[in-house]
Image (cartoon, rainbow over all chains, first blue to last red; front, side):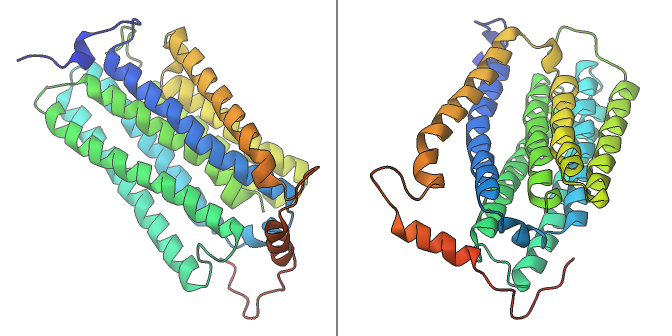
Length: 190
Length: 122
């Protein structure tokens, strides 16, 4: 069967598929970096924002950080298993990572339900607009990552396209890194 | 796939454990209520955690220089884009202009009175 060009060509010495993922992440740096920089500068400029941030749920934020760090561990273990051609283990770790994504979304869903029902909506103030935009954009990335991982897992169990485990892992770790910065900004600095 | 030898599972579990220790420190730091310590434990540790994930989980430490240069370039682009629009977005007046609407909105938000029905702290 013909191999996709992403696995055959390597102009820079880096497989094209992997290079593409890194470029996607490069563009994500601009998106999330711009958003977080705006948030940081607004907070530094307008001290009253801290009055709003005291209402975010530190426990939920911490639990989600723990879940994402653990899912990142599963993602890298899936990559390792794919490298040593342990297909069942790679499949299992991919699904454990997806489980982490679902756990993250459930916690986020409960958190948002509580906040919205208590009047902290996206239109309440600029702080809450940033809160929902940043966390929502991040959650969309979590959902996208989980869907892609699920698709990849069914190829992996058949022993096909094992290099994709590393590629989705790189993406997943980036999603984790974004959360690592969102956590202190939205939940710790009060 | 990568050309380097895969690490053992225990190697990654140890890194994960280190990340959890750093997470606990970043949560406990603000409890001491010392502002500078909160900044260090929250943002300093976030930087350390991100660096560990990038180097050990994403294997950026063994990745080709091309990727490093590309990431630095994109960070630079972000700074340029931000610096380009920040004066308009972050400020509400300059030498020859004033954004009265924005100024009024900021003033309104700065004067927000305590909530009529204070929501529960969770």
